[in-house]
Structure formats: C-alpha cells, structure tokens
Image (tube, rainbow, N blue to C red):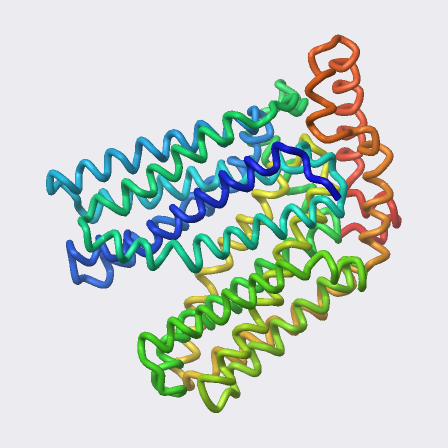
Length: 456
C-alpha cells in the first residue's frame, strides 16, 4: 500500500521533533537540578508540563478545528524554536531560574498540545481516511517516536548537557526549526467547515459530547484514561521496586526501561497484522488483557530478568494499542470534529495520570511495593472487561460502514490539491461538511449504526 509523498515529510518532521523532545526530556530536569536540590521545586518543573492538557485540552481541540491544521503545526514548531533559543540565551548569560524553567516546560507542552492535535487531525486528510493506511502510518509514526524520544534522545540530552546548559536546548530548537520547515512544505488542505456563529466554548462542548455519547469512542477514550491511572501507579514505585525487590542499580533500571521501549516498538510493528487477523475490536481487547497480565507478572517477578520480560510484553501491548486506537478514531470521526475528539480523549488520559501517581504512592506506603503493581494489574483487567463490549468488532465494522459513504469519495491530498481551488470543489467541500454536521447532530457513528442501545 503506497503512501502519499507528503507522509514521508510528516514522518521525518515528527521523528526529528521527537528526537529533540527526548533530548529536552532528559536535559530539563538535570538543568533544574543545577539550580536547586529542593524536591518540590523540581516537581514544579515536571508538573508544569502536564498543566496545558488539564486547562486547555478541549478548547485547544476546538481551536485546531477552526484553524488551518498544517499552518498550526509549523507555526507551533517555529514558536517553540524561538522559545528554546531564548532559553538557551538565558543559560549562556546565567539568567536561568526555576520559575523560568517551569514556564518553558508549560509553553513547550502547550505547543505540543496544538501540534499533536493538529497532526492527528491532518493525517486522515493526507491519507484519504483509509483504515489500513492509517494503521500503517500510525505504526511508523509511533515506532519512530519511541526510537527517537525513548532510545536516542535521553542519552543524547545527557551527553550534550556535559558541553553546557545551553547546548541541549539549542539542539532541541534546531529540531523544531527543521520540523517547521518540513511541515511548511506539506500539501495544504481545505479548512474544516465550522459554524462561525457558535462560541468556542460551545464548539468545545460539542466535541466532548460527541465522545461521551458514542460507546465506541468512549471505550477508546477510557482505555488510555484508566490505563494511565494504572501505569502511573506502577511508574511511581518502579525505580524503588527495582532497587529493593529486584536488586538492580541505576544501570539495571535503565535496561528495564529499554526492555519496555523495545516491546513498544515490536507492538507498533505488529499492530496492523493483529488488526487484520483478529479484527480491530478483538485486537484492542487482547492487547489490553496482555498489558494487565504483564503487570501482574511484573509484580510477581522473582528477579530482574523476569521483570524485564514482563515490561517488554507490557510495552508490546501498549505499542499495539496506541496504533490501533488512534487509527480507528481517525477513520470514523468527521473531519470537522477530529481535533476536538482527539483532544478530549487525550485530556481524559492526562487528567487521570496524577490520580495514578497518588494511588501508587499511597498503596506502597500503606502496604508494600508490590501492592501498587497488583492493583494496577487488577485495574487494567477490570477496564478491559468493561470496555470489551464497547469496542467489539461489530461496533467497529458498523462505525466504518457509516463513515465510508461520506468519506469514500475523499482521496489523498495529491488528488485534492489539483481540484480544491475550483468552484465545484468548494461546493463539494460545503456539501460534505453538511453531511458531517447532520451525522454529528444525531450522536456518534456507532449510536446511529446499531440503535439507541449504543448510546451512553
């Protein structure tokens, strides 16, 4: 299945940007550590990176649905280039401070909110909304992101920091600049038709309502939300668990994380195969079950080797889930709602994360270090049982059938670019937007396909 030429540029842009993200992810806390040893001050810098999704998640999606998505991506990356350049200058002149680093972390995450949401919404337009092509594209994007930000970026960030506090910041700025140039060269697409009479808050509420009224989309959103509670409960105690229960030091702990990332690459690579073989709904249920069982295996692991295997299996389940779920969402959600639906799902996952961290710390303090792991495994398996009926193959196929009539005439952007400027093409865009609006007014795609019983 041949990809449009523009996808290669988008893939390169996101890979380069992810590499820069990995550099900053490792360097920013270390830079903060050169300024203070106060754990609460360090926590402020870390927490600042999660705040934008909590405050602006749904509103950001509504803005992306109003704006040109390609322009949103390259302008955001250009702005992050300037931000990191200024911060690097502050490092050179000794003007860094904890409040400044917290502000930088906040603004970088805010840029990530707009870029990621716009990229998620832009991809179906680029690929023509073909489910198989979307799965293949998301597998490549996810694999490259894991390799760049999980494997290459953090060691590079630590190494560059040895050359000076400004060096990793300048490296990330360069990555954003290159990404902006690549995205700027991508094909333009027509802006989604959104009613100008509706307020931004009303449009944001419509996007969130679209998710909660559709059982399939709600099931897809609940998996990462509940999963984040479980995984953050594990992550909170994992380093201590590795040292005290498995007897491994800092290097061994790094190897455990590498095993998880390796599993994630494998899972992303086989996601499309699982979807074709089992059906997307069944594949999602299987990968979620695998995650829960793997965490249970981690809790019971007698040594670091078994723990590494459990983390690799868990990573594989997560990698496949993070390809199949977004690909399905991109295939069935109307174009003019894509940004809001994607940001609503992401916001639910981000809001759930702090609860998981608190749960993990409380259980470890009240009981022992294995208890958070067992609790996380139970939570994942319970979530799987609940959402299994919401994301069945029957629901998936019904949603795809309903989406196909309105989308089947949409070709990849190469075909769009030659005709979008003609009056007839403009009329077709308006007509298509009208079909999407009627579909949105009646509830989610599955609710219409399988009846009132599908609505929440």
